Amino acid sequence: MNTFQDSVVTAFSLITSFDPLLVSIVLRSLAVSASACALACSVGLLLGAWLGVARFAGRGVVLACLNTALALPSVVVGLVIYLLLSRTGPLGFLGWLFSFKAMVLAQAVLVLPVVTALVRQSIEDADRLHGEQLQSLGAGIGWRGMILLWDERYSLMTVLIAAFGRAISEVGAVMVVGGNIDGFTRVMTTAIALETSKGDLPLALALGVLLLLVVLLLNVLISLIRRWREAREERGVWQADGTTDAVIVKAGAR
Amino acid sequence: MSNTRTSESVPDVLFKLNAVGVQFGLVHALVDCTLSIGHGERLALVGANGSGKSTLLRHLHGLLPASSGQMLQPVPARQAMLFQRPYMLRTSVQNNVAIGLWLGGMRWRAAREQALAALERVGLAALAERSGKTLSGGQQQRLALARAWALKPQVLLLDEPTASLDPAAKREVESLMGEFADSGMTLIFSSHNLGQVKRLASRVIYLEHGHVLADAPVKSFFGEALPPAAAQFLKGELG
Image (tube, each protein chain N blue to C red):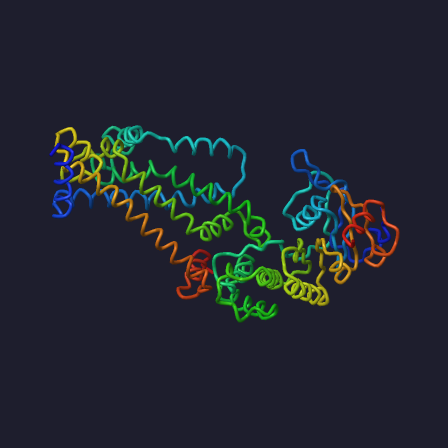
């Protein structure tokens, strides 16, 4: 058997035996990336929706900067966050460097442009089609953005997948700000890089396979949710959960 | 221009347009448009595609600013507009109507109750809990009428409201438009259906390339000598 086959066999035995080291790294990766996505989405959804409907002087420049930020190298983000969080940096008093929080912050910064840019495009397209009708009903820019965001919610699930995929697969930022500390800030990508350099290919391969599986499972889950909701709507079923009522009552507080 | 009904003869003026022009880049969608629209009128806008009907409606509704000239509204009037393809939100029929009321400042629960009354008005109350997206074209247009009616507008603007509907749905929507107009609402609609214009309108404006070429009461419009372009359009549409 060659090295590759050996590695594959060992990797699958590690996965099927729920190796504790493997499990802890995977869980930490999921926690970091999910937190970063939640943080980035809470800002990016609103910002993207607003950029999708608002028209202001300099909007073209803002969009050009936003689209450029899509190509931000993760190590550069890591470096900037490192400088901000280092002892002499402006956020050094937080004491977050080489911690879980620093990794979440770095990934959130990395993912924010992805969420904002994709949401902006989706909402702008919807606004071009339906914005006038909402405006005719009395919706200003803010409500137009919020209503379109709510109405496009199934399409925007793809944005979640893209954001999570970008977060969980990056290595540079978490390596710089997390430090790849065993049992503390080591995540799947940094572990793969380390184990490969050490020559422990089975563990690296097992982590690689799990990384792909996680993203695949997320895709399947979101696809299922989307199909289920769309099928319900096509059958004309609506009222069962009253979600629109809840959202509107909360949003408007009226 | 056939102006058997002049601006001066319009009673209770709601809109007064003075040489209004609307431009999109290099395209002049509306050129030097001068007219008055009075309370309770049933005004039909006719003309070929791209003649400026929708632009005029959108300008009257405040969705498009004038590039030149000005529009005066001596008495502010509540307006609602119906579009050719109404936007259905991904929610129930009832919520689709309630959202307009809610955006107008009404509490959500009250808005839903009033929405139900509006749906009863257009015969859709039985479908209140259905998803708005699953309605047929005619039902969606009736829902849009309910959404507009619920706002209690004094002026209802309609952009080709029956353009993509089958004959039965067309009749239903037309009948509702007639009822709304009978209740005193000012109706301003664009249409390619001259039969519908004859049935519903009291006054007709013919537009071509953004210019108002004819403006006359409906009987005169279909009976008297029109400018050649309008007469040719009429002939083509009737033929």
